[in-house]
Image 1: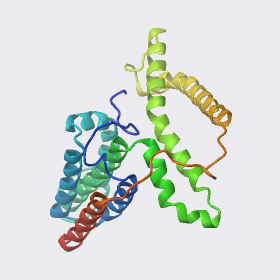
Image 2: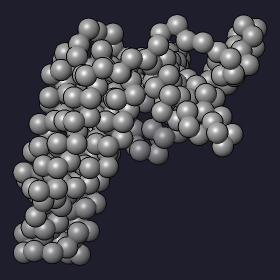
Image 3: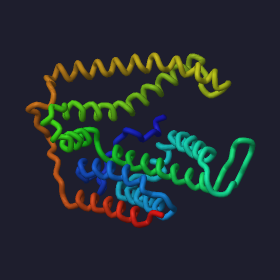
Image 4: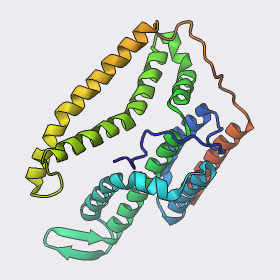
Length: 264
């Protein structure tokens, strides 16, 4: 569980780390949209190449990201199997009872699995290379025009930042509870599926109690320090947009153009 990288930040001095958080947020948002343009091997290869380029520029170890995302592979596998047996079209490759695998279904399943994986990798790169404070400042800056219609932009950005920050904390708390329950004789790895689900239930109560306790402590700490929202607040680190951020957006737009012209 400690290997999970979702929501974690890894400090480093790389090209991706030095980018303005606003450019990274915009680029990830655009990538999630244009990823649906891929519908053949060439377009999917371009998306995978973009992901590996991002990993290389972030100076993060591929094996580190792989170990951290192994737990989400089950979601990708389930999605792959559902599309494999439910999609139709093309020649029948395999048939057993009511289950049929067609060439079109197999191709569509592979492309959907690749699409989910690249989205997960790109969004994970965002959190790995951007601190929660930077994400908060970037989101607040991008959503700043909504303040004119009385949208609590600062509070919304702060809420997202705290949510990301609490992910590794809750994972660590879960690990401690699992070890404490195992020391008292609980077994989470053997038995039927029903018994395993029953063994997980005792984890939920202390986990939720601990989460609410941490949230209450955080709220009291913020009130004790005079926090009253974003009105009149200043920032220690000012966001600065430079040519690297413009280059990143240009690369994402170039990828979008290549996907459009490479579609079937």
